[in-house]
Image (cartoon, rainbow, N blue to C red; front, side):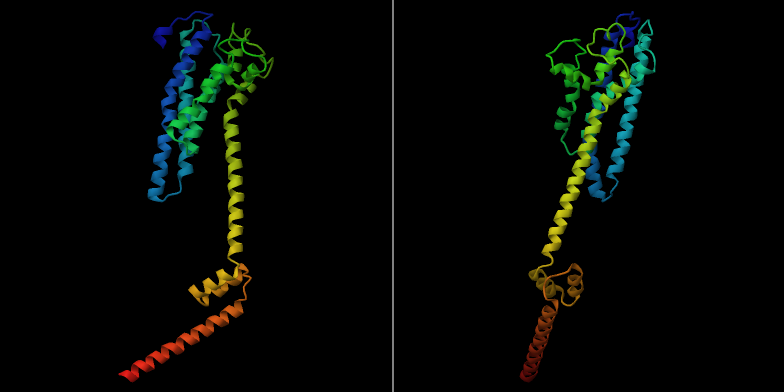
Length: 281
């Protein structure tokens, strides 16, 4: 990249920025895609070794992935400014703009690959949607173009706010914020992570409520007369304490009495059989 874009003159900033962004995206993309295979191997290992550190390992892997993304974006920023003969894309705003723009395009792959049960093909399809939708709806490739109403979707993409900062190109962008542009860029890049966390939280609450309902139904079924009778038949007097604890609706004293009578009857039958066997001898 340095050899082919070296000594780029002023006015070519958009072209250099696009080229560096494409190279950066496809440099990080293979590593992000392999997270799905890593998650599958991790789950299989956890089941085989019976350890419960799956989530911790996933979080560590996610942190490592984000670190790699920061390194790639830092190299992208350095290479861009090394190639240009002007310093129009230098500064902390452009560094963090490039970083969060790349994050918005790749974070979906990481989240779906690590924290869902999607297959590799599904992660590849849905994880690539932000990149494809950015091309269609961000209006950065054709400023001001698009159907009224539909082109308002540009405000959802970090790339739109990044291009509002590019000298000589930001003036062509329609509807750029007059202030707090960097704040909007960061918020737009975090849209998918925020929605994903909300979905995971709602799913956890739903599963917890569903589990509590199932447990309540199970406890109610354990209070029936049939369950108490079966428990006494299987475990005898030992089951009485548990039945009292769960609040069984059955008459436990009556069941205990019938169990005692049956035990005495069985003992008498055994005694008669022993007598008969002694007489026959």
